[in-house]
Length: 265
Length: 354
Ligand SMILES: Nc1ncnc2c1ncn2[C@@H]1O[C@H](COP(=O)(O)OP(=O)(O)O)[C@@H](O)[C@H]1O
Ligand SMILES: [Mg+2]
Image 1 (tube, rainbow over the protein chains, first blue to last red):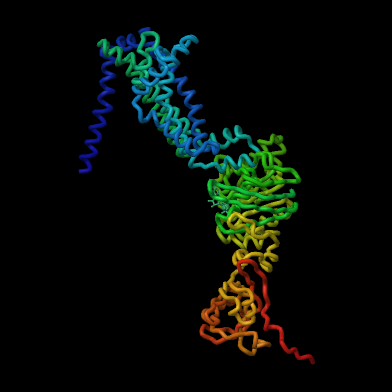
Image 2 (cartoon, protein in one colour):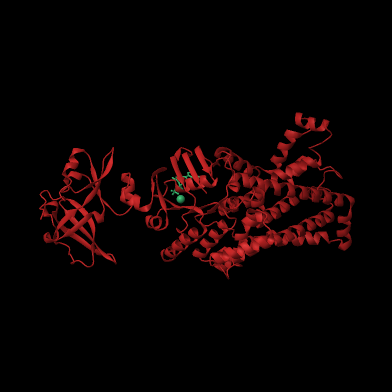
Protein backbone atom coordinates (compact mmCIF):
# COMPACT_ATOMS: atom_id res chain seq x y z
CA UNK A 1 0.00 0.00 0.00
CA UNK A 2 2.73 2.39 1.02
CA UNK A 3 4.73 1.42 -2.04
CA UNK A 4 1.76 2.27 -4.19
CA UNK A 5 1.49 5.76 -2.77
CA UNK A 6 5.18 6.42 -3.12
CA UNK A 7 5.02 5.17 -6.67
CA UNK A 8 2.06 7.39 -7.44
CA UNK A 9 3.82 10.40 -5.99
CA UNK A 10 6.90 9.75 -8.07
CA UNK A 11 4.82 9.37 -11.20
CA UNK A 12 2.91 12.58 -10.47
CA UNK A 13 6.09 14.56 -9.91
CA UNK A 14 7.57 13.04 -13.01
CA UNK A 15 4.58 14.16 -15.02
CA UNK A 16 4.53 17.62 -13.52
CA UNK A 17 8.23 18.40 -13.45
CA UNK A 18 10.41 16.09 -15.47
CA UNK A 19 8.25 15.73 -18.55
CA UNK A 20 7.86 19.49 -19.14
CA UNK A 21 11.57 20.07 -18.64
CA UNK A 22 12.39 17.30 -21.08
CA UNK A 23 9.85 18.76 -23.50
CA UNK A 24 11.44 22.17 -23.19
CA UNK A 25 14.91 20.76 -23.78
CA UNK A 26 13.72 18.79 -26.76
CA UNK A 27 11.83 21.81 -28.09
CA UNK A 28 14.84 24.05 -27.68
CA UNK A 29 17.08 21.68 -29.57
CA UNK A 30 14.67 20.32 -32.17
CA UNK A 31 16.55 22.26 -34.81
CA UNK A 32 19.87 21.38 -33.24
CA UNK A 33 22.26 23.69 -31.50
CA UNK A 34 21.75 26.21 -34.27
CA UNK A 35 18.06 26.69 -33.55
CA UNK A 36 18.75 27.13 -29.88
CA UNK A 37 21.47 29.74 -30.34
CA UNK A 38 19.52 31.55 -33.04
CA UNK A 39 16.52 31.77 -30.76
CA UNK A 40 18.65 33.26 -28.04
CA UNK A 41 20.74 35.62 -30.09
CA UNK A 42 17.82 37.40 -31.72
CA UNK A 43 17.96 41.09 -30.83
CA UNK A 44 14.51 40.93 -29.22
CA UNK A 45 15.66 38.03 -27.02
CA UNK A 46 18.76 39.87 -25.92
CA UNK A 47 16.73 42.98 -25.21
CA UNK A 48 14.12 41.03 -23.27
CA UNK A 49 16.77 39.28 -21.20
CA UNK A 50 18.37 42.64 -20.51
CA UNK A 51 15.04 44.13 -19.36
CA UNK A 52 14.40 41.13 -17.15
CA UNK A 53 17.87 41.29 -15.58
CA UNK A 54 17.52 44.98 -14.94
CA UNK A 55 14.16 44.50 -13.24
CA UNK A 56 15.51 41.60 -11.18
CA UNK A 57 18.51 43.59 -9.97
CA UNK A 58 16.59 46.75 -9.10
CA UNK A 59 13.69 44.93 -7.49
CA UNK A 60 15.97 42.71 -5.44
CA UNK A 61 18.06 45.59 -4.16
CA UNK A 62 15.06 47.76 -3.31
CA UNK A 63 13.11 44.95 -1.70
CA UNK A 64 16.07 43.76 0.34
CA UNK A 65 16.61 47.18 1.85
CA UNK A 66 12.95 47.97 2.41
CA UNK A 67 12.02 44.43 3.34
CA UNK A 68 14.60 44.33 6.11
CA UNK A 69 13.61 47.80 7.28
CA UNK A 70 9.93 46.90 7.23
CA UNK A 71 10.63 43.75 9.25
CA UNK A 72 12.60 45.73 11.81
CA UNK A 73 9.82 48.29 12.15
CA UNK A 74 7.09 45.71 12.39
CA UNK A 75 8.89 43.68 15.02
CA UNK A 76 10.90 46.22 16.98
CA UNK A 77 9.45 49.71 16.71
CA UNK A 78 7.67 50.48 19.95
CA UNK A 79 6.64 53.91 18.71
CA UNK A 80 4.40 52.30 16.08
CA UNK A 81 1.01 51.67 17.63
CA UNK A 82 -0.30 48.13 17.81
CA UNK A 83 -3.11 48.97 15.40
CA UNK A 84 -0.77 50.46 12.85
CA UNK A 85 1.46 47.43 13.08
CA UNK A 86 -1.46 45.09 12.50
CA UNK A 87 -2.54 47.13 9.52
CA UNK A 88 0.96 47.18 8.02
CA UNK A 89 1.25 43.49 8.67
CA UNK A 90 -1.86 42.76 6.64
CA UNK A 91 -0.74 45.08 3.88
CA UNK A 92 2.51 43.14 3.60
CA UNK A 93 0.46 40.03 2.86
CA UNK A 94 -1.73 41.74 0.28
CA UNK A 95 0.35 40.60 -2.72
CA UNK A 96 -0.04 37.00 -1.57
CA UNK A 97 -3.81 37.37 -1.54
CA UNK A 98 -4.22 39.43 -4.69
CA UNK A 99 -3.63 37.92 -8.12
CA UNK A 100 -0.62 39.53 -9.83
CA UNK A 101 -2.82 40.47 -12.76
CA UNK A 102 -5.07 42.44 -10.42
CA UNK A 103 -1.97 43.98 -8.88
CA UNK A 104 -0.84 45.10 -12.31
CA UNK A 105 -4.28 46.39 -13.11
CA UNK A 106 -4.31 48.46 -9.91
CA UNK A 107 -1.09 50.11 -11.01
CA UNK A 108 -2.54 50.87 -14.43
CA UNK A 109 -5.67 52.30 -12.84
CA UNK A 110 -3.67 54.40 -10.42
CA UNK A 111 -0.78 55.54 -12.56
CA UNK A 112 -1.92 54.96 -16.16
CA UNK A 113 -1.54 57.78 -18.71
CA UNK A 114 -5.22 58.78 -18.34
CA UNK A 115 -5.06 59.21 -14.58
CA UNK A 116 -4.15 62.44 -12.81
CA UNK A 117 -1.04 60.94 -11.23
CA UNK A 118 0.06 59.39 -14.48
CA UNK A 119 -0.40 62.70 -16.31
CA UNK A 120 1.60 64.44 -13.61
CA UNK A 121 4.51 62.06 -14.05
CA UNK A 122 4.14 62.28 -17.80
CA UNK A 123 4.47 66.03 -17.77
CA UNK A 124 7.60 65.60 -15.70
CA UNK A 125 8.93 63.40 -18.49
CA UNK A 126 8.53 60.08 -16.72
CA UNK A 127 6.25 57.37 -17.99
CA UNK A 128 5.21 54.85 -15.40
CA UNK A 129 2.76 52.55 -17.09
CA UNK A 130 3.79 50.90 -20.36
CA UNK A 131 7.36 51.68 -19.36
CA UNK A 132 10.07 50.21 -17.18
CA UNK A 133 9.19 52.08 -13.94
CA UNK A 134 5.69 50.56 -13.91
CA UNK A 135 7.10 47.11 -14.45
CA UNK A 136 9.51 47.61 -11.59
CA UNK A 137 6.68 48.78 -9.35
CA UNK A 138 4.56 45.80 -10.36
CA UNK A 139 7.38 43.36 -9.59
CA UNK A 140 8.14 45.13 -6.33
CA UNK A 141 4.51 44.72 -5.36
CA UNK A 142 4.45 41.04 -6.18
CA UNK A 143 7.71 40.19 -4.38
CA UNK A 144 7.49 42.51 -1.38
CA UNK A 145 6.27 39.94 1.18
CA UNK A 146 9.00 37.42 0.42
CA UNK A 147 11.84 38.96 2.41
CA UNK A 148 9.62 40.39 5.13
CA UNK A 149 8.02 37.02 5.77
CA UNK A 150 11.42 35.34 5.99
CA UNK A 151 13.03 37.88 8.29
CA UNK A 152 10.20 38.77 10.68
CA UNK A 153 9.92 35.38 12.41
CA UNK A 154 13.66 35.31 12.99
CA UNK A 155 13.63 38.77 14.53
CA UNK A 156 10.74 37.73 16.74
CA UNK A 157 12.51 34.58 17.78
CA UNK A 158 15.84 36.13 18.72
CA UNK A 159 14.09 38.88 20.70
CA UNK A 160 15.65 42.22 21.45
CA UNK A 161 17.71 41.30 24.51
CA UNK A 162 20.98 41.13 22.58
CA UNK A 163 20.22 44.48 21.00
CA UNK A 164 19.45 45.99 24.38
CA UNK A 165 22.68 44.57 25.74
CA UNK A 166 24.55 46.21 22.88
CA UNK A 167 22.92 49.55 23.62
CA UNK A 168 23.87 49.41 27.31
CA UNK A 169 27.43 48.72 26.16
CA UNK A 170 27.39 51.96 24.20
CA UNK A 171 26.69 50.73 20.66
CA UNK A 172 24.68 52.98 18.34
CA UNK A 173 21.61 51.65 16.56
CA UNK A 174 23.63 51.34 13.35
CA UNK A 175 26.48 49.39 14.98
CA UNK A 176 24.00 47.23 16.84
CA UNK A 177 22.22 46.37 13.61
CA UNK A 178 25.34 45.37 11.75
CA UNK A 179 27.20 43.64 14.53
CA UNK A 180 24.38 42.06 16.52
CA UNK A 181 21.17 41.81 14.50
CA UNK A 182 22.52 41.19 11.01
CA UNK A 183 24.52 38.03 11.81
CA UNK A 184 21.34 36.47 13.13
CA UNK A 185 19.17 37.33 10.15
CA UNK A 186 21.66 37.23 7.28
CA UNK A 187 20.81 33.74 6.06
CA UNK A 188 17.12 34.45 6.19
CA UNK A 189 17.73 37.57 4.15
CA UNK A 190 19.75 35.54 1.64
CA UNK A 191 16.92 33.03 1.46
CA UNK A 192 14.40 35.82 0.96
CA UNK A 193 16.60 37.38 -1.72
CA UNK A 194 16.77 34.10 -3.61
CA UNK A 195 12.99 33.81 -3.48
CA UNK A 196 12.69 37.40 -4.68
CA UNK A 197 15.07 36.84 -7.59
CA UNK A 198 13.23 33.69 -8.61
CA UNK A 199 9.85 35.36 -8.40
CA UNK A 200 10.85 38.50 -10.29
CA UNK A 201 12.61 36.43 -12.93
CA UNK A 202 9.46 34.49 -13.64
CA UNK A 203 6.82 37.15 -13.03
CA UNK A 204 4.38 37.27 -15.91
CA UNK A 205 0.86 38.45 -15.11
CA UNK A 206 1.51 41.76 -13.40
CA UNK A 207 4.27 42.66 -15.81
CA UNK A 208 2.19 41.79 -18.85
CA UNK A 209 -0.64 44.08 -17.76
CA UNK A 210 1.63 46.97 -16.86
CA UNK A 211 4.14 46.71 -19.67
CA UNK A 212 1.85 46.40 -22.66
CA UNK A 213 4.51 43.96 -23.96
CA UNK A 214 6.08 46.48 -26.33
CA UNK A 215 8.81 44.96 -28.46
CA UNK A 216 12.29 46.36 -27.76
CA UNK A 217 10.89 48.50 -25.03
CA UNK A 218 9.02 46.73 -22.29
CA UNK A 219 9.23 43.15 -23.34
CA UNK A 220 10.65 40.79 -20.74
CA UNK A 221 11.87 37.23 -21.11
CA UNK A 222 8.56 35.78 -19.94
CA UNK A 223 6.38 38.00 -22.07
CA UNK A 224 8.60 37.24 -25.05
CA UNK A 225 8.11 33.52 -24.51
CA UNK A 226 4.39 34.19 -24.48
CA UNK A 227 4.62 36.15 -27.73
CA UNK A 228 6.80 33.54 -29.42
CA UNK A 229 4.30 30.86 -28.54
CA UNK A 230 1.50 32.99 -29.96
CA UNK A 231 3.52 33.35 -33.16
CA UNK A 232 4.24 29.58 -33.32
CA UNK A 233 7.92 30.39 -32.89
CA UNK A 234 8.30 27.36 -30.64
CA UNK A 235 12.03 26.77 -30.89
CA UNK A 236 12.79 30.29 -29.73
CA UNK A 237 10.18 30.08 -26.98
CA UNK A 238 11.65 26.83 -25.71
CA UNK A 239 15.18 28.21 -25.83
CA UNK A 240 14.31 31.19 -23.67
CA UNK A 241 12.25 29.01 -21.35
CA UNK A 242 15.25 26.71 -20.98
CA UNK A 243 17.46 29.62 -19.99
CA UNK A 244 14.90 30.72 -17.42
CA UNK A 245 14.54 27.16 -16.13
CA UNK A 246 18.31 26.84 -15.81
CA UNK A 247 18.32 30.05 -13.81
CA UNK A 248 15.60 28.67 -11.55
CA UNK A 249 17.44 25.42 -10.95
CA UNK A 250 20.60 27.31 -10.02
CA UNK A 251 18.57 29.44 -7.63
CA UNK A 252 16.94 26.35 -6.19
CA UNK A 253 20.30 24.81 -5.40
CA UNK A 254 21.49 28.06 -3.91
CA UNK A 255 18.30 28.22 -1.88
CA UNK A 256 18.89 24.79 -0.41
CA UNK A 257 22.37 25.86 0.58
CA UNK A 258 21.09 29.08 2.16
CA UNK A 259 18.46 27.13 4.04
CA UNK A 260 21.04 24.79 5.51
CA UNK A 261 23.17 27.72 6.57
CA UNK A 262 20.15 29.33 8.15
CA UNK A 263 19.52 26.29 10.25
CA UNK A 264 23.09 26.14 11.45
CA UNK A 265 23.07 29.73 12.68
CA UNK B 1 27.98 56.51 41.51
CA UNK B 2 25.47 58.22 43.74
CA UNK B 3 21.91 57.56 42.65
CA UNK B 4 18.75 59.38 43.49
CA UNK B 5 15.30 58.38 42.30
CA UNK B 6 12.24 60.42 43.10
CA UNK B 7 8.56 60.03 42.32
CA UNK B 8 9.07 57.32 39.73
CA UNK B 9 5.98 56.09 37.88
CA UNK B 10 5.56 53.67 35.00
CA UNK B 11 2.47 52.40 33.24
CA UNK B 12 2.23 49.63 30.63
CA UNK B 13 -1.05 50.24 28.85
CA UNK B 14 -3.57 50.37 31.67
CA UNK B 15 -1.35 48.53 34.07
CA UNK B 16 0.43 50.61 36.71
CA UNK B 17 3.73 48.74 37.03
CA UNK B 18 5.66 51.24 39.17
CA UNK B 19 4.08 53.74 41.58
CA UNK B 20 5.81 56.61 43.34
CA UNK B 21 9.15 55.00 44.01
CA UNK B 22 11.74 57.09 45.87
CA UNK B 23 15.19 56.09 47.02
CA UNK B 24 18.79 57.12 47.26
CA UNK B 25 21.86 54.94 46.96
CA UNK B 26 25.30 55.79 48.26
CA UNK B 27 28.35 55.20 46.11
CA UNK B 28 29.80 51.71 46.32
CA UNK B 29 26.81 49.99 47.85
CA UNK B 30 25.30 46.71 46.78
CA UNK B 31 21.53 46.97 46.80
CA UNK B 32 19.09 44.09 46.49
CA UNK B 33 15.69 44.73 44.94
CA UNK B 34 13.56 42.06 46.51
CA UNK B 35 9.91 41.24 45.99
CA UNK B 36 7.45 38.84 44.47
CA UNK B 37 7.37 38.25 40.72
CA UNK B 38 5.52 40.88 38.77
CA UNK B 39 6.14 43.48 41.44
CA UNK B 40 7.97 45.88 39.13
CA UNK B 41 11.61 45.19 40.00
CA UNK B 42 12.73 44.65 36.43
CA UNK B 43 10.82 47.71 35.31
CA UNK B 44 12.65 49.87 37.84
CA UNK B 45 16.00 48.45 36.79
CA UNK B 46 15.23 49.00 33.12
CA UNK B 47 14.24 52.60 33.75
CA UNK B 48 17.54 53.16 35.54
CA UNK B 49 19.31 51.71 32.51
CA UNK B 50 17.32 53.81 30.05
CA UNK B 51 15.84 50.73 28.38
CA UNK B 52 12.35 51.81 29.42
CA UNK B 53 11.01 55.34 29.34
CA UNK B 54 9.93 57.04 32.55
CA UNK B 55 6.32 58.24 32.82
CA UNK B 56 6.93 60.57 35.70
CA UNK B 57 9.70 61.26 38.19
CA UNK B 58 13.41 61.86 38.11
CA UNK B 59 16.44 59.64 37.91
CA UNK B 60 19.57 61.44 39.00
CA UNK B 61 23.09 60.02 38.66
CA UNK B 62 25.83 62.03 40.33
CA UNK B 63 23.60 65.06 40.64
CA UNK B 64 22.71 64.98 36.95
CA UNK B 65 19.22 64.16 35.71
CA UNK B 66 19.54 61.33 33.20
CA UNK B 67 15.90 60.72 32.27
CA UNK B 68 16.48 61.80 28.69
CA UNK B 69 19.83 60.12 28.19
CA UNK B 70 19.81 56.97 26.05
CA UNK B 71 21.29 53.79 27.58
CA UNK B 72 24.48 54.32 25.57
CA UNK B 73 25.30 57.46 27.52
CA UNK B 74 24.42 56.43 31.06
CA UNK B 75 27.67 54.69 31.94
CA UNK B 76 25.95 51.59 33.25
CA UNK B 77 26.60 47.88 32.95
CA UNK B 78 23.59 45.61 32.69
CA UNK B 79 23.51 41.88 33.31
CA UNK B 80 20.32 40.53 31.78
CA UNK B 81 18.21 37.83 33.29
CA UNK B 82 19.01 35.38 30.51
CA UNK B 83 22.40 36.99 29.96
CA UNK B 84 21.62 38.05 26.38
CA UNK B 85 25.11 37.11 25.27
CA UNK B 86 25.93 37.81 21.64
CA UNK B 87 25.49 34.29 20.42
CA UNK B 88 27.60 34.57 17.30
CA UNK B 89 30.58 36.05 19.16
CA UNK B 90 33.13 34.21 21.26
CA UNK B 91 33.66 34.89 24.94
CA UNK B 92 36.44 37.29 23.99
CA UNK B 93 34.28 38.94 21.36
CA UNK B 94 31.49 39.45 23.85
CA UNK B 95 33.76 41.04 26.43
CA UNK B 96 35.53 43.20 23.86
CA UNK B 97 32.34 44.49 22.25
CA UNK B 98 31.76 47.40 24.59
CA UNK B 99 35.39 48.45 24.27
CA UNK B 100 35.38 48.26 20.49
CA UNK B 101 32.31 50.47 20.18
CA UNK B 102 34.00 52.94 22.52
CA UNK B 103 36.99 52.92 20.13
CA UNK B 104 39.60 51.77 22.59
CA UNK B 105 42.95 50.93 21.04
CA UNK B 106 43.58 47.31 20.07
CA UNK B 107 46.30 46.89 22.66
CA UNK B 108 44.19 48.31 25.48
CA UNK B 109 41.25 46.10 24.50
CA UNK B 110 43.47 43.06 24.55
CA UNK B 111 44.76 43.88 28.03
CA UNK B 112 41.34 44.65 29.42
CA UNK B 113 39.81 41.46 28.00
CA UNK B 114 42.66 39.41 29.42
CA UNK B 115 42.21 41.11 32.78
CA UNK B 116 38.48 40.33 32.88
CA UNK B 117 38.92 36.77 31.66
CA UNK B 118 41.35 36.31 34.53
CA UNK B 119 39.09 38.04 37.04
CA UNK B 120 36.05 35.97 36.13
CA UNK B 121 37.97 32.71 35.94
CA UNK B 122 37.22 32.13 32.27
CA UNK B 123 40.78 31.39 31.19
CA UNK B 124 40.85 28.72 28.53
CA UNK B 125 37.31 29.51 27.38
CA UNK B 126 38.11 32.68 25.44
CA UNK B 127 37.45 31.14 22.04
CA UNK B 128 34.21 29.40 22.96
CA UNK B 129 30.78 30.48 21.84
CA UNK B 130 28.00 31.01 24.38
CA UNK B 131 26.24 27.77 23.46
CA UNK B 132 29.41 25.89 24.40
CA UNK B 133 29.36 27.20 27.99
CA UNK B 134 27.60 26.12 31.18
CA UNK B 135 25.05 28.37 32.87
CA UNK B 136 27.53 29.58 35.46
CA UNK B 137 30.13 30.37 32.82
CA UNK B 138 27.62 32.30 30.75
CA UNK B 139 26.69 34.28 33.80
CA UNK B 140 30.32 35.19 34.33
CA UNK B 141 30.73 36.18 30.69
CA UNK B 142 27.70 38.44 31.02
CA UNK B 143 29.26 39.91 34.14
CA UNK B 144 32.64 40.43 32.47
CA UNK B 145 31.03 41.98 29.41
CA UNK B 146 29.06 44.44 31.52
CA UNK B 147 32.13 45.37 33.56
CA UNK B 148 34.56 45.73 30.67
CA UNK B 149 33.82 49.37 29.78
CA UNK B 150 34.27 50.35 33.44
CA UNK B 151 30.69 51.37 34.20
CA UNK B 152 29.80 53.54 37.17
CA UNK B 153 26.75 51.50 38.02
CA UNK B 154 26.14 47.80 37.61
CA UNK B 155 22.58 46.54 37.25
CA UNK B 156 21.85 42.82 37.50
CA UNK B 157 18.44 41.32 36.79
CA UNK B 158 17.97 38.03 38.66
CA UNK B 159 21.59 37.12 38.00
CA UNK B 160 21.33 33.70 39.59
CA UNK B 161 17.81 32.67 38.65
CA UNK B 162 18.85 30.40 35.81
CA UNK B 163 21.59 28.62 37.74
CA UNK B 164 21.16 25.47 39.77
CA UNK B 165 21.05 25.78 43.51
CA UNK B 166 24.46 24.36 44.25
CA UNK B 167 26.51 26.66 42.05
CA UNK B 168 24.24 29.56 42.89
CA UNK B 169 25.68 29.72 46.41
CA UNK B 170 29.19 29.78 45.11
CA UNK B 171 28.45 32.42 42.49
CA UNK B 172 26.71 34.60 45.02
CA UNK B 173 29.69 34.93 47.29
CA UNK B 174 31.94 35.23 44.26
CA UNK B 175 29.84 38.15 43.03
CA UNK B 176 29.82 39.75 46.46
CA UNK B 177 33.64 39.55 46.64
CA UNK B 178 34.02 40.85 43.13
CA UNK B 179 31.81 43.86 43.72
CA UNK B 180 33.54 44.59 47.02
CA UNK B 181 36.88 44.49 45.32
CA UNK B 182 35.83 46.78 42.48
CA UNK B 183 33.88 49.14 44.70
CA UNK B 184 31.24 49.63 42.02
CA UNK B 185 27.72 50.71 42.95
CA UNK B 186 25.46 47.79 42.12
CA UNK B 187 21.78 46.95 42.16
CA UNK B 188 20.55 43.43 41.71
CA UNK B 189 17.05 42.08 41.42
CA UNK B 190 15.93 38.90 43.09
CA UNK B 191 12.79 37.24 44.33
CA UNK B 192 14.77 35.05 46.71
CA UNK B 193 15.02 36.52 50.20
CA UNK B 194 17.96 34.38 51.25
CA UNK B 195 19.91 35.68 48.32
CA UNK B 196 19.10 39.29 49.14
CA UNK B 197 19.84 38.88 52.82
CA UNK B 198 23.11 37.13 52.18
CA UNK B 199 24.48 39.40 49.49
CA UNK B 200 23.07 42.90 49.82
CA UNK B 201 24.22 45.83 51.94
CA UNK B 202 20.73 47.19 51.74
CA UNK B 203 17.48 45.66 50.62
CA UNK B 204 14.60 47.41 48.94
CA UNK B 205 11.35 45.50 49.18
CA UNK B 206 9.22 46.05 46.09
CA UNK B 207 5.60 45.00 45.97
CA UNK B 208 2.86 45.90 43.50
CA UNK B 209 5.01 48.62 42.02
CA UNK B 210 5.71 50.30 45.34
CA UNK B 211 8.82 50.49 47.46
CA UNK B 212 7.65 49.03 50.77
CA UNK B 213 10.82 49.44 52.76
CA UNK B 214 14.50 50.10 52.37
CA UNK B 215 17.14 49.17 54.89
CA UNK B 216 19.81 46.70 55.88
CA UNK B 217 18.68 43.09 55.93
CA UNK B 218 18.79 43.14 59.75
CA UNK B 219 16.74 46.32 60.05
CA UNK B 220 14.12 44.95 57.75
CA UNK B 221 13.97 41.68 59.57
CA UNK B 222 13.88 43.25 63.00
CA UNK B 223 11.63 46.12 62.26
CA UNK B 224 9.33 45.54 59.32
CA UNK B 225 7.36 48.65 58.51
CA UNK B 226 4.42 47.04 56.80
CA UNK B 227 2.54 43.79 57.21
CA UNK B 228 3.64 42.83 53.71
CA UNK B 229 7.31 43.13 54.61
CA UNK B 230 6.80 41.32 57.90
CA UNK B 231 5.18 38.44 56.15
CA UNK B 232 7.50 38.39 53.16
CA UNK B 233 10.74 38.28 55.13
CA UNK B 234 11.34 35.20 57.22
CA UNK B 235 8.80 32.54 58.15
CA UNK B 236 5.73 33.54 60.02
CA UNK B 237 2.22 32.70 61.13
CA UNK B 238 -0.67 35.17 61.12
CA UNK B 239 -3.12 35.09 64.02
CA UNK B 240 -6.41 36.75 63.18
CA UNK B 241 -7.26 37.92 66.71
CA UNK B 242 -4.12 39.09 68.46
CA UNK B 243 -5.83 39.48 71.85
CA UNK B 244 -6.52 35.76 71.98
CA UNK B 245 -2.82 35.13 72.58
CA UNK B 246 -1.68 34.87 76.16
CA UNK B 247 0.22 37.97 77.18
CA UNK B 248 -1.27 40.09 74.41
CA UNK B 249 -4.75 40.54 75.87
CA UNK B 250 -4.57 44.32 75.72
CA UNK B 251 -4.34 44.13 71.93
CA UNK B 252 -8.13 44.22 72.19
CA UNK B 253 -7.75 47.99 72.78
CA UNK B 254 -7.28 48.17 69.01
CA UNK B 255 -10.13 46.23 67.44
CA UNK B 256 -9.32 44.19 64.36
CA UNK B 257 -5.66 43.83 65.24
CA UNK B 258 -3.89 40.79 63.85
CA UNK B 259 -0.62 39.30 64.99
CA UNK B 260 2.28 38.02 62.94
CA UNK B 261 4.47 35.60 64.82
CA UNK B 262 7.90 34.42 63.76
CA UNK B 263 9.30 31.05 64.84
CA UNK B 264 12.00 32.72 66.95
CA UNK B 265 9.34 34.65 68.90
CA UNK B 266 7.99 31.37 70.22
CA UNK B 267 9.45 29.01 72.80
CA UNK B 268 8.13 25.58 73.80
CA UNK B 269 9.09 23.44 76.77
CA UNK B 270 8.05 21.69 79.94
CA UNK B 271 6.49 23.77 82.73
CA UNK B 272 9.80 23.62 84.62
CA UNK B 273 11.61 25.26 81.72
CA UNK B 274 9.90 28.59 82.31
CA UNK B 275 10.53 31.10 85.08
CA UNK B 276 7.12 32.69 84.75
CA UNK B 277 4.65 30.00 84.01
CA UNK B 278 1.82 32.53 84.01
CA UNK B 279 3.06 33.99 80.73
CA UNK B 280 2.74 30.64 78.97
CA UNK B 281 -0.20 28.62 77.87
CA UNK B 282 -0.44 24.96 77.16
CA UNK B 283 -0.48 23.52 73.70
CA UNK B 284 -0.03 20.28 71.88
CA UNK B 285 2.75 19.37 69.46
CA UNK B 286 1.33 18.53 66.05
CA UNK B 287 4.40 17.90 63.91
CA UNK B 288 8.14 17.82 64.29
CA UNK B 289 10.44 18.21 61.27
CA UNK B 290 14.16 17.72 61.24
CA UNK B 291 15.80 20.72 59.58
CA UNK B 292 19.42 19.67 59.50
CA UNK B 293 20.64 22.01 62.22
CA UNK B 294 17.48 22.26 64.32
CA UNK B 295 13.96 20.96 64.80
CA UNK B 296 11.00 22.73 63.34
CA UNK B 297 8.11 22.24 65.72
CA UNK B 298 4.47 22.91 64.95
CA UNK B 299 2.31 23.40 68.05
CA UNK B 300 -1.38 23.99 68.42
CA UNK B 301 -2.54 26.45 71.03
CA UNK B 302 -6.30 26.54 71.18
CA UNK B 303 -7.22 26.85 67.54
CA UNK B 304 -4.00 28.59 66.50
CA UNK B 305 -1.12 26.77 64.98
CA UNK B 306 2.34 28.22 65.66
CA UNK B 307 5.75 27.28 64.36
CA UNK B 308 9.02 27.41 66.26
CA UNK B 309 12.58 26.14 66.06
CA UNK B 310 14.08 23.94 68.74
CA UNK B 311 17.74 23.32 69.29
CA UNK B 312 19.02 19.79 68.78
CA UNK B 313 20.67 20.09 72.23
CA UNK B 314 17.34 20.22 73.97
CA UNK B 315 15.18 17.30 74.86
CA UNK B 316 13.29 15.97 71.87
CA UNK B 317 9.53 16.63 71.74
CA UNK B 318 7.12 14.31 69.97
CA UNK B 319 3.85 14.87 68.17
CA UNK B 320 1.02 14.70 70.68
CA UNK B 321 3.12 15.94 73.63
CA UNK B 322 1.57 18.49 75.97
CA UNK B 323 3.91 21.48 76.13
CA UNK B 324 3.96 25.00 77.52
CA UNK B 325 4.19 27.69 74.88
CA UNK B 326 5.62 31.13 75.48
CA UNK B 327 5.17 33.87 72.89
CA UNK B 328 7.91 36.38 73.59
CA UNK B 329 6.69 39.04 71.20
CA UNK B 330 4.43 39.58 68.24
CA UNK B 331 4.25 41.91 65.31
CA UNK B 332 0.80 43.47 65.56
CA UNK B 333 -0.97 45.26 62.76
CA UNK B 334 -4.36 46.58 61.80
CA UNK B 335 -5.61 48.70 58.96
CA UNK B 336 -3.96 51.87 60.27
CA UNK B 337 -0.89 50.86 62.10
CA UNK B 338 1.71 48.23 62.87
CA UNK B 339 4.02 47.80 65.84
CA UNK B 340 5.93 45.21 67.80
CA UNK B 341 4.60 44.23 71.23
CA UNK B 342 6.34 42.26 73.96
CA UNK B 343 4.51 39.70 76.03
CA UNK B 344 3.00 41.75 78.87
CA UNK B 345 3.03 38.86 81.35
CA UNK B 346 6.70 38.16 80.90
CA UNK B 347 7.70 40.91 83.27
CA UNK B 348 7.37 39.56 86.79
CA UNK B 349 4.43 41.39 88.34
CA UNK B 350 5.89 40.92 91.84
CA UNK B 351 9.65 40.88 91.51
CA UNK B 352 11.32 39.41 94.53
CA UNK B 353 14.47 41.27 95.42
CA UNK B 354 17.03 39.42 97.40
N1 LIG C 1 6.80 45.78 28.29
C1 LIG C 1 5.74 45.49 29.07
N2 LIG C 1 4.49 45.56 28.58
C2 LIG C 1 3.42 45.30 29.35
N3 LIG C 1 3.48 44.93 30.62
C3 LIG C 1 4.70 44.83 31.17
C4 LIG C 1 5.89 45.10 30.43
N4 LIG C 1 6.95 44.92 31.25
C5 LIG C 1 6.45 44.55 32.43
N5 LIG C 1 5.10 44.50 32.40
C6 LIG C 1 4.23 44.17 33.52
O1 LIG C 1 4.59 44.96 34.62
C7 LIG C 1 4.58 44.20 35.80
C8 LIG C 1 5.90 44.29 36.50
O2 LIG C 1 6.84 43.58 35.74
P1 LIG C 1 8.35 43.44 36.16
O3 LIG C 1 8.94 44.78 36.34
O4 LIG C 1 8.98 42.56 35.14
O5 LIG C 1 8.25 42.69 37.55
P2 LIG C 1 9.33 41.83 38.33
O6 LIG C 1 10.65 42.03 37.69
O7 LIG C 1 9.27 42.36 39.73
O8 LIG C 1 8.89 40.41 38.26
C9 LIG C 1 4.19 42.78 35.41
O9 LIG C 1 2.84 42.59 35.72
C10 LIG C 1 4.41 42.73 33.93
O10 LIG C 1 3.48 41.89 33.33
MG1 LIG D 1 11.82 40.55 36.69
